[in-house]
Image (cartoon, rainbow, N blue to C red):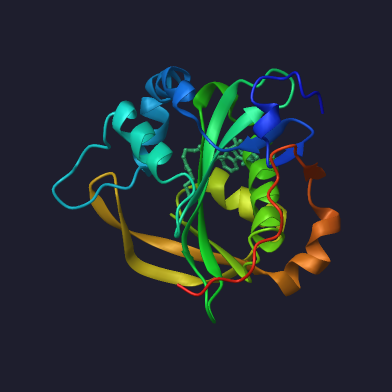
Length: 214
Ligand SMILES: CC(C)(COP(=O)(O)OP(=O)(O)OC[C@H]1O[C@@H](n2cnc3c(N)ncnc32)[C@H](O)[C@@H]1OP(=O)(O)O)[C@@H](O)C(=O)NCCC(=O)NCCS
């Protein structure tokens, strides 16, 4: 890890090829550009609430990501290249519920120019380590359209467990689509962590947080 890499001083977790860090207002232009060049690539997988058959403009997406980057129910990270600091994608641990559930749902995308290099797998492995470490959660869930072969491959590589098919679960690209539930718990992680891509806490890593009921 080189702390001179752009953004590395805020990294919560650092892997061989990518690191996770929170977004800042200064990231807007680069983030918007990446989503712009990846528009066709991302569109088939974008959530679209009823009445919105097109994903919001990249500027709107960024503003929402920034304003909810560290909130009660969301932790949002940029996935950045360890070598250069360039933004390659984004990962969210969302719908965080504490109390007796201690659960969150992971969502992620990698820009088209950076796809197929193992970055999503590394990013999700780091997010899981963050969820079960400093965030003190018990379960991380990923919900995936059965046609999304690359995303299914990502969770399978990390050892997530298939938990079943939810019919018309989420409105994606204008239609209610079935999704497969995949999940991992802290108990699974104890066995799986040694098989995951290696990473370490970064300079921006948070101290372990006490459990907060929500
Ligand atoms: C899903 C996504 C995040 C994966 O990112 P990525 O950085 O390319 O993922 P990785 O390189 O870590 O792993 C992808 C795996 O899928 C495999 N893959 C790619 N295309 C595939 C296909 N059409 N069929 C089967 N496997 C495929 C790759 O070979 C790789 O597996 P491998 O390491 O065994 O070779 C990326 O494709 C993306 O952003 N897609 C659009 C948004 C999206 O789908 N988000 C997830 C919603 S649940």
